[in-house]
Image (cartoon, rainbow, N blue to C red; front, side, top):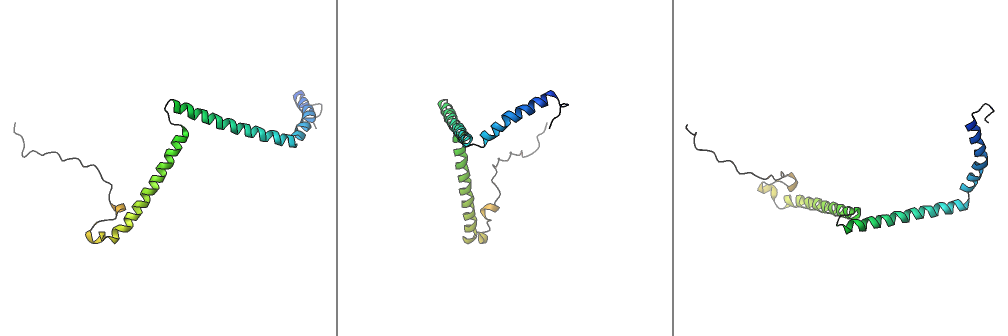
Length: 130
């Protein structure tokens, strides 16, 4: 316990803690507090849902994508990437069966990625004379 040599703010805090602290602790352990905490949590969740809906409608009003639109597009891109990967595996599995080794071709995954070929510069037949 704090003696008389403790600072006055500490004595004031300890007195407040003895009187108010016990009541606050009792309330925090009560059923009413649990109900209140649940209601506050539900209200916060409802407020978040409403604000998200409002912002989505506002963004669509000015013809801008909302976060839900971006998430939906990202999911579609991921699905397409998985499909392309599966098709590439199927092509690699079919390439040896089709006699690709006998024809001298490599599996699709071993092929180099295509580059855009640029036409060669025309060379002059001889040196220009000055």
